Image (tube, rainbow, N blue to C red; front, side, top):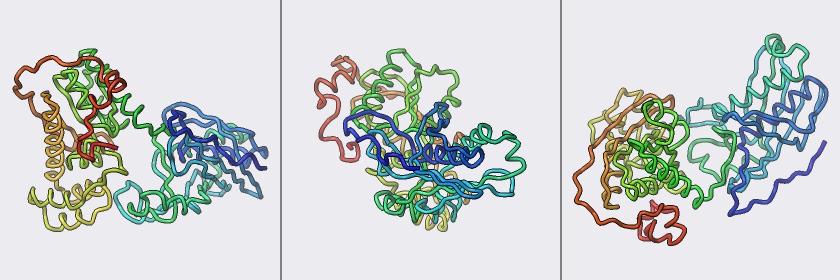
Length: 416
């Protein structure tokens, strides 16, 4: 069976959402399982996403033989400039005697060759969230198609092989090789959806979230670098209302500027290791493509706190910010992590002062399970009263005169 092998054209200024490689892999696997167990190919398949929503996808290539079925989906990344937009994401499902579900990577799915990614070295670059998403949707398919329902997986097994036929070529346009992922792309996606990378709209949403927190008189504005860190921040500050929490993504500087404009009295920055390191380096815009983790900088941090020479050398040759964290934990050295948090705090405070602002400020580093690894805080400094300025919402001033909200002479690392 063949279906139109295309996706809607991308609008560079559009806001149409798409779906991750993980969602496409889950959909391909689910369709193939239904066909394998029921003998019929579904014209469409509905999958669940990690964020609890559902999505409906249409198979574009299918095949079937004795004990196996394969299906491909075409990835639609919406209006995001995603290099995998239009790629075929495929799954081959085989019935095997061993009970349970096994998931492996095939052609075009990268292999992990370096530590620091939270994945086993030597294994496929299929991240934990999409791996779970694939498994969950395969179980749903079994319940729909197998006569015995879930009991089928207690007696038999399903082997899922995910492939991306053009993955090795696509990977050349990514940072995978630098991260030690060779031979293809990664299967990614913590939410299951791809949101368009429109910097203007993205930045505006961050500004608006801070403004809402300020206008609702939140005791403090808690800014997190992502969805997981925001969830962990809510655990740290359970007394605060939801409106106090802002997911600032890569726009640390813009969020801080907005806090200053609205005279926020206290703020908190909560992040995981990668963006915490970049903030410590002085980057107020932390997009992965624009600002890389500097391992020479991290090695010097280790020297400055008196870390063992073998840790300094290992950090200098590290692979990712997460790898740096893992090395510190292996050597039982917390001081470098505390120093990174202190440097990130100092970067934020300098930035706030440069905007003629002052507020109490706290910086917290959390690990990938939400445990607090290091934190530091500073009270609001004394500051002379300043004349009142334009108190219109920053988003309105940006629309009417962008130069008033964002200085053109800001350091390059603060710009996109």
